[in-house]
Image 1 (cartoon, rainbow, N blue to C red):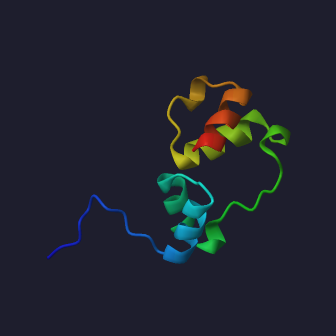
Image 2: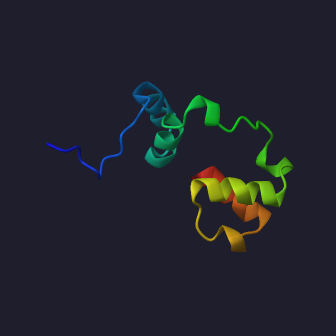
Length: 82
């Protein structure tokens, strides 16, 4: 039987469960658990210290809709809630 396409495959189940236990959404936990470590965003600067363009690019990477019309504050809020 073919795998169910509606259920995403988690590459690092242990990390996924730990992130879910910390209260992270299923989508965000899955994205982090499925990202190879060499592709992780290690920019530790707070969102507030990044430029609007940097925030826009990060929002684009993770697929936040409506990002082109968002202010810097709105981008920060969207990134934190995603």
